[in-house]
Image 1 (cartoon, rainbow, N blue to C red):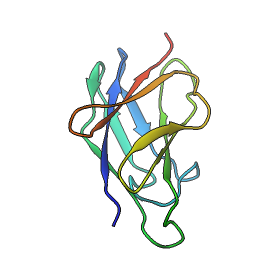
Image 2 (cartoon, rainbow, N blue to C red; image 1 turned 135 degrees about the vertical axis):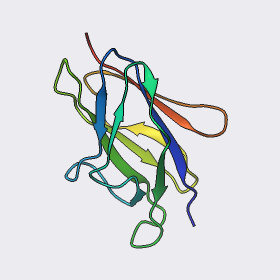
Image 3 (cartoon, helix red, strand yellow; image 1 turned 90 degrees about the vertical axis):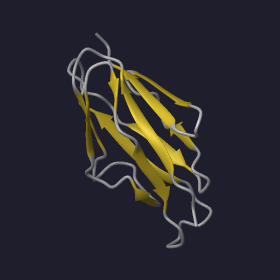
Length: 120
């Protein structure tokens, strides 16, 4: 059985931002988060913890779980940030650098914090 992990989104802006996991973007071997999920984060604050978990079996054993999150930025049409994670719950950024500042760090307790800073 794969270990799950927790992602917290930090909104480093003056605007409310919705972050969504699209149906038709990069998503595979992922029990959580589910496609179509949306998290709204207030200015200069953080979201609740979002669980992520890799699918076991079904052709996913030995593969990374993967999902994309797209922020609804008020100043640009944002590109999606790809994430991938292993069965131990270790999360990493993947793919091209998006058109906004995107940082991922692991904090004590094993929680991952993704900080998004939109361009002014």
